Amino acid sequence: MSITLHWFLPTSGDGRTVVEHFHANRAPAAGTRREPDIDYLAQIARTAEQVGFTGVLTPTGTWCEDAWLTTSALIAQTKTLKFLVAFRPGVLSPTLAAQMASTYQRISRGRLLLNVVTGGDSVEQQRFGDWLDKDQRYARTDEFLQVVRGIWTGKPFSFHGDHYQVQDATVLAAPDPVPPIYFGGSSDAALPVAAARADVYLTWGEPPADVAEKIARVRALTDRPIRFGIRLHTISRDTSAEAWASAAKLLDALDPAAVAQAQAQLGASESVGQQRMLALHGGDLTRGVRGLEIYPNLWAGVGLVRGGAGTALVGSHEEVADLIEEYHSIGIEEFVLSGYPHLEEAYWFGEGVRPLLKQRGLLDGDRTLALASA
View: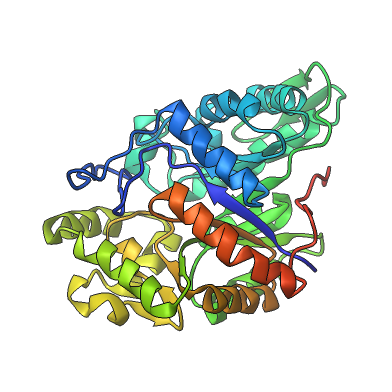
């Protein structure tokens, strides 16, 4: 069982500090800002492809550029790189989503992966005109994915549920291959949807024992094949001391007022996954860089200001490879990574850690799923 490595496209901006545009935090330090223009994003995409990443995740929300449009513009800038396009099922019809994905597969020659983001923040959802509560959003996502997969069969598909009703929905041609569905969520409402509909269940970077517990919960809910992935940042250097010095620079650049603002906003999130991220560091900037090491070589400092994925693999290339191997031993097969700045950190990981993973027999070409599961 090999692993698949993905990188991240920072479509809200990048820089030499933790550039935070999630929610309402918009205060990058002077001199660190890199705008997410198409030339810079293309540079990151080409680098990710060059150093051996299978795909790149592109986020979704009002704080970043649109993932569908941005990644479609990068298709011609790359050759083999896949695009893990995040989108919210509540803001477009399942028939339109099925059509967009089918078109994307044809024009990219099969390079689309889909990350379905149900949404754990009602404030953000309401910006899109979505007023359902969290449990209702997951119920709607379940119906959404049933409709999308039904349409992808290439035959007229009808569905009558609580949230969607379509009659004889179809697309010009069924996508080939069918894009795999990546899905995350830690709540009791999320896990059954993941178990029933996802090809890859994604979790944020908690310590291995906590991740193993979540994997076990999902597996207990299904007898269908499902893969597991994890979303992490990375700071990998030639020596452990160099890596922790880089982490310390990120921490030293954080403004205590910005941390307090971010923690107040993130603390109000309905997302169970977000609350689990916050519990790892407690919002305490005074713990210092090594005080935020919550597990050997797993650092929670990014989550002080960044919503979503808030932990990083920090250490020498060997130490980072060791922790990846540990996650793999509990069932993680896909790693979605990022780092600040995303261009430089892609090289650090791709040239430093990836060769070690290959030497250990953990990389066996591109085994990203392209399956038509029910």
